Amino acid sequence: MELALIRSLMDKEFYEDHRGSRCPDRLFSSDVRKIKKAIDAAMDRYERTVTPDEIEALFMANNPTLTTAQKASYTSLFGQIKREQPMGSDVAQEVLSKLFQQVIGEDIANLGFDYVNGDKSSLEPLRQMLEQYGDDFTPNLNIEWDDIELETLLARNDLEARWTFNIPSLVRKVEGVNAGHLIEIGARPNTGKTSFHASLIASPGGFAHQGANCIILCNEEGYHRVGARYLTAATGMTMQEVKANPSKARDLYAPVKERIKIKDATGRDMNWVESVCKAYKPDIVLLDMGDKFAKTGGFARLDEALKANAVHARMIAKQYECAMFYMSQLSAEAEGKVILNQSMMEGSRTGKAAEADLMILIAKNPPVQGQDEEDIERHLNVVKNKLTGWHGSVHCQLEYQTARYTA
Image 1: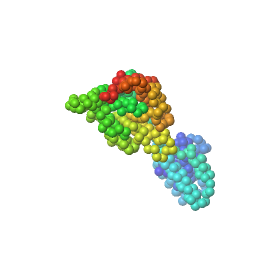
Image 2: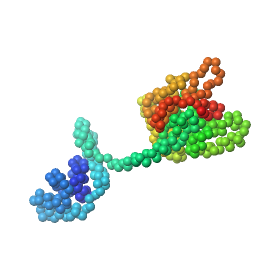
Image 3: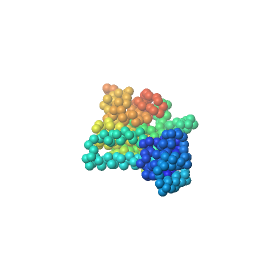
Image 4: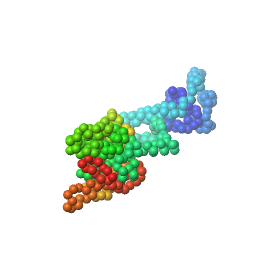
């Protein structure tokens, strides 16, 4: 291998890319190291690619005191070099990178022994070593750059809304979502968060009707209560009507039931969510509530834990090619307000919101004194939108008895 590297170093372009500390003499055995020095001298003087015959002639001319045995040994060594084919630049670079890293590793290890034995009392030698080698430490990295041809970009962006929303007022502004998207949904308690995702997935025209395989992981309400919302959203029947006519409800529920899976995920974390996505390969994943999957241990503040949780959710969406819906509570600041903003996400500063491709905050009208029944109007505040760029509010109604959002 070292002779093939020596042969490669005779190429001017390759030599310039790996000269000096990137290819230290210590990489080679003692005899080959002397030939490497001859190549260094030739490159500095002639500044061109040289041949093995030229290096042999220069080496012999500059070492007239060699014995007959030494001359024969070097002649044999040069004969082997001449028979070597230069390595491809990519392979040679990887080999040199590995050897160079080993050399640095040995230096650091030796320095470490000096510290352990008390022979060094300052970090200055380590700092000097890092300064010396920092720019020359070549990682073993080969990137296949993404295709940004015009046709590819057009085709990929045409698929941006594979799963379309089934709320007319919303779909006019934000058509839908696709694999890799993180969609954060926030609302105050008793606003209709669970009904919102049940409506998006199970009601007519929802994601399940479009053919999406949907997984709902709930850690707040019991799974049977969440499931009941999905049942009423799919059938358009109240629970009383379902009990009175179960055969009709079963027929209406059948078209989406096989594409909807619900699991009580109380006490689970985002690593478990990732395992679910890896095993079942869903198109849509819904976390209700997303924040409750966060691990808070090891974080100085809650918002840091929630940011890490959202980052993990986004990575899952991208790696396993699913759209991730992340349900969240809003802080008390949002109580009674129709116009909402990102800062109202509970327990978060900027980190959690920064990860979202789309953020929808749901508001309802403030209660009116003397009004017995709650207003069914809901306001969907699109406060972050990297999909179409539109921001603002759209309006719809919540049919709370059937968990359907209509407009």
